[in-house]
Every structure is written in C-alpha cells, then in structure tokens.
Image 1: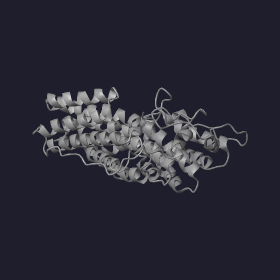
Image 2: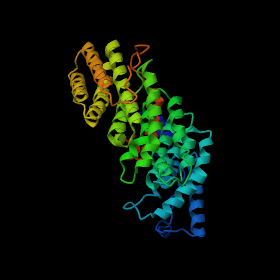
Image 3: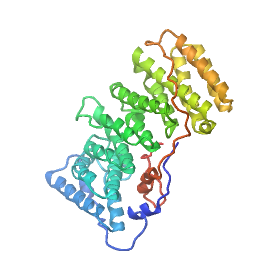
Image 4: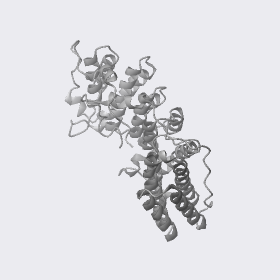
Length: 395
C-alpha cells in the first residue's frame, strides 16, 4: 500500500540531494537564545524573519548544495526537544513567519522550487503542530503537479487538527480543499492515502477531542463516497486505503456518531465490499490488489456487528474474511458478500436501512499510477536514499 519508492535520480540531483561541488551554502543557524525564548521580542522576530527570507532565497537558487542546505536548515530550526530546545512560543512565531514568506513560492514557475517549499512546509508543520502554516499548506495542496500536492496534503495533516480544535483560532481553510485535490488526481494512490490521513489519522492522538473528529466525519465520508463511485467504472489505485478509511470510521468514531451516521458508515463499508466482490468476480487480475480490502472493510463490518450486538453480522463477515484469506473461488466470495448483505438488511436497528449496493458499470483491470507519483519521495530524501522524512509518509 505504501506507494513511496525511490526512483528518479535526475529529480534527486535537481533537488540538491546528490552532492555537487560548487557554491557556498548559507549554514548559520539561529541563536539558541531565540529558540529557547518563550516570547520573542520584536528584535528577535525580525532576526528570525530575515533568516527565513535568506534561506528561501537559497531554496530558489541554482546551486544544489545551497538548495539542499536551505531545505534542511528551514526544516530543522524548528525541531522540538530532544533535537534542540525550541519552545512552543518560538515554534509558533517561526511557523507564522515561514507561512508569510513560503506561501508565495506556490506561484514559482519551477516545480522543483515549489516541491522543496512544500517539503519544508510539511516538515515544519509536523514539528510546530499549530495552525500557522494553513495558507502555505493550502497553496501547495492546490498545485497542479502531483508531487507538490502530495506534500501539501502532508502539511495539511499536521495543520488541520489545530484548525478544528475548539475553540477555533482560525477559519478551517483546509478541509474543504481536500476532496477537490482527490478529484484532480483520481489515479494517484499517494494522494488518496494522504487525503485520508489529513482528515483522520490524527483522530487517535491524545489531544484530539470528540468535536474535532465529528467535524471531519462528513468530509471523510465525502471522499470515501467519491471513491466508491470510482469503483463502479474501474478499480482505482490503492483500494486498501479505502478499507482503512472504513476501519477508522468504525474503530475511532463509531460511538460518537448518531444512528443515521452509523447507518451511513455501514452502507459505505458494505458498498465497498460489494463492489470489490463484483470486480474480483469479473476480472481475476484484480484479486491480489483487492483481497486486503476484504480484511479491512470486512473487518470493519465485523466490528459493526459487535457494536450492534448482532452475531449474524459477525459470523457472516468472519466467513467472508476467511474465504478471501484462503483464496476461495470468486463465485464463492460473491455468495458470501450477498449473505453478509442480507444479515445487514435484516437488522432493523439501522436507520435508514441498509440498501442494496450499486452494480458496477464496467469490469476493469486494476488502475495503474503515473510514474510521476513517486517523485515526492525522491524529493523528500534527506540522506540520498529516497526515503521520505520520518512521520511524513504516514504509513
């Protein structure tokens, strides 16, 4: 399911990851006295702003060493303990000032400059864990190239929680933008993974409260329902991401939903399982890609059966999951999908009742992704090995 592989040496060179022996990078770090200040003075703020502006100048240059040094410096100067002693007050100011200047790079004509800027934004957002980088995250999410949009979504994953945490400190500008990004890149596995992560991966964090999860419930359902529509015509990239989305809805938020919302989640999980069954029956080439969805989405329905105390649902989902794991014939899988549907429809606690899932319009081979998708990982490598920064991939 992890689509982030190292592949583009040319892109790595262009991003300044490979060594190049010309030019002198700007390497002076900000003073420790500033990073350890709980409240920065005007003079300290000005110094931080000038330092950021200088690094961003280097980030736009043609010297690979200077580009790499600027990207790493901008990313690491906001690291929290134990990497350094940066305070919350300093990180707040740093993120605010970085947002002020880096968002403008979203309009830069060079995709490589925009990509580096988006990587910096995501890394700093991960460390700062506040809403300050919302404008920059949104700008990079809306990029017309997939690698930049991926890193914009990753920045959104770490910025969005602060935008929806009560009481709101700033308007949530990120949530409404996520579904349009998914629609812009319908053949991208990393986009759908990062979209789901931006909306829900943080649900299990200790400082997440009920209101925050409920705020993102409908947007997550909107993305999932869009993807379910894609299954009617083809198998979209990364079906396991949809299975995990249903698992999160059931495992992390079920008890906080009202009856109608619980029924909607159940319907979505059953629709996903049903259309996977239909695609497997129609084209055996889909089987390796889709078996994992029986486990995750079928497992979500198993949990639903436990939640509503209906052993028939539990038993039917168990049979389906085991059959998929045993590589049972497609006809048998379809029969068990139908049996599972009948148990859900027999349960009168679902309101509205569970409807018969839609029929697929076309049997198609698994959707392949454009090679461009993997560029984001090559861009994110800090050691020349093509590995995304820790925590950025979300897998």
